[in-house]
Figure (cartoon, rainbow, N blue to C red):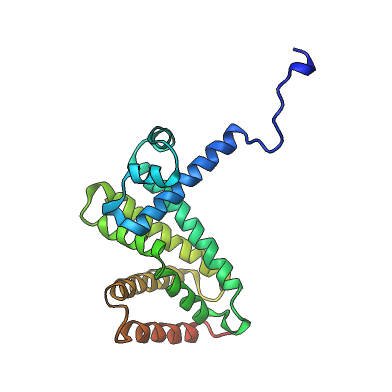
Length: 209
């Protein structure tokens, strides 16, 4: 074949791999958005496809089952939340870049719709057999991410064998507070009082530099 007959990519055109990646990203974003808006009960692959602007056939090609789609979307959402959290922490004033500031920011993150959707999904796994294993994996994955971020922000601040138990206890406590907060909006300030106590305890363990 002569050089004149070779096909060349048009400037600005995307490769098949790039188009595939973009379609998957739209599907994962749409799944996370649908979970946040409608919860697990309102999540359907038809609604996800509509929000993503892709056909049902394309959705099934990339993620053949609803479980596969949700599992991929959860990992995608966790990565996004982690990046947003770390970016927000770096933008805090110097005097707030400590363990108390990190906890305050984590609490704020837990009140956002994506995190509340994750909480709802985890709770649904208690009674939904199709979600049980996925919910268990979600809990383990969140704990691992929190531990990783903790070690990045506060390296060598606590013995490794203490971090796992402390993080799991802290996560369980904040999830419980988030559930209460979603019901009453902390109208009596009870959740804030508990959070302030946690922050004070954390600063005793990891004093500001």
